[in-house]
Image (cartoon, rainbow, N blue to C red):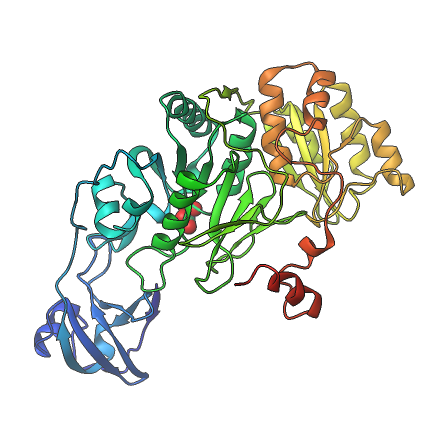
Length: 464
Ligand code: ASP
């Protein structure tokens, strides 16, 4: 929240309530606040429990809240009044026996949030009735069943929740769900989509992860459309993989279905934040259709068989190399009992010479060390330079074009299964769900790189 602070008007005590009383502007008034620095239009929100009483909090039409020092206000023009809605109406989801059954498992994040006017914060909340009440179109595609597994922002997802989610997916598939949707915070959705791609194998049905960048109380929210796309995919698509379903372009034309091991959050605020890296997305989806962009995906089956291998070794870390990194970074991981380290190296996969002694120690202490690239696109190539070859001798294993975060979760998963580093290597280097590929397509690299003719040509093939 931005705080506009202006102390030039000494006429008031600065108490927000007094100022609102003086101008006869109760909370929930739609107003124009006039200050010396300019005027601000918006909705006056009630003061949150933790906020001071010197500022008036205004919800601006774009959705952001700002705090304005009460003493800076010269006038308040009242334009209207808006009733507060604390709760979305609960409606029972209709049942149609001809429609597929989709299970929505909620873990939290912005998609499950609405603004809590008591604290002024976006809080996780998840109720099936609320979902149907706010996005009734969901009933066009399926019978939706929901269950709240967790109510956390995604940075709080970890091995415990990954294991719990994988097991819940297994149970739903065995119970006959035609598709599964997982509501999740966007920040680390790609970690979860990767680990679920390893923990849940050979699924007969689509497993679609979905989130939203903007909460549903904001006009530009992507929550409803992402949810519609995800539910449609889970109900109707023949793609039986772990996918992430989020906005494709910046506008709301269509969503993209990204393979769970090749996707990454790439923008802190755009709704089109998820991009497939090192490949092209599996398909695009809109309200009417699902259009595959490739053919090599695993197809939906009629059986209910799925393999759940939900294990994770927590003593695994990721080291993002930076110039002048000191070897004690790696030493401290070894000393603290870490069993696996993924390095995100520069270029083709490099770290500086001073790190070599620490890598040697890691090798002696039986710590599994894997190399990935910070460039995200492209492969680790440790045979090109002498430095790479030296690291190979120190036991560093090149992880091809696995994304650093994917290598991190895969290493935790592999070490959860065995402490034998040869077996770990076999697991790491055997692709399970597209996490390493034989080649990366150039038209994937170019996608949405900004008005280039070849990009336009590529995209136009899929545009209606
Ligand atoms: N911080 C939130 C989360 O990742 C953001 C979101 O859901 O988009 O849980």
